[in-house]
Length: 148
Figure 1 (cartoon, rainbow, N blue to C red):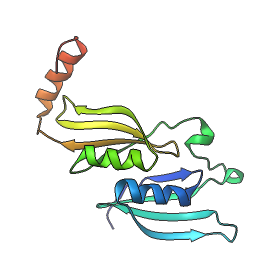
Figure 2: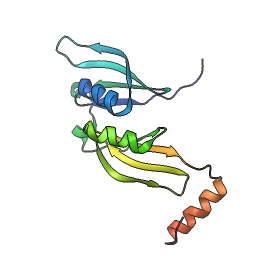
Figure 3: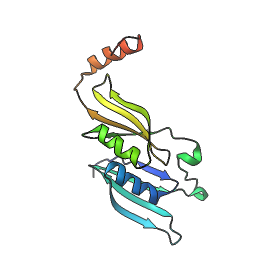
Figure 4: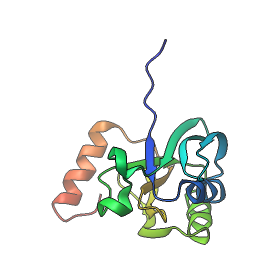
């Protein structure tokens, strides 16, 4: 058995989140376990080759999403072929671009999106392969107030 890391999102409104991720990121729903009252106890979606698990909030078990907690400390890095097109779809579906799409010193065209449920997505397209040494040089220049 291999080791896997799979994000598990706690969401206020998991059914709506699945719809958003489908519209915004082309997700495919793989599994949904719903309670009689409609809450989703567990669901799985696939975005490209990545599996993401999610469920509704269960405050009675200490499970709350970013909206109930006042924000998130985790960002999800989503590499796509055309970052501008994905960002446009995500905004049209209800997301908010919190950092505009631009070329970055580390070789990606990138922006940051907050989904309607409080999760942060770093949307990126690789535009250049940058060695660790060159990345550090560019970062140093950026921190010194120059251009990366």
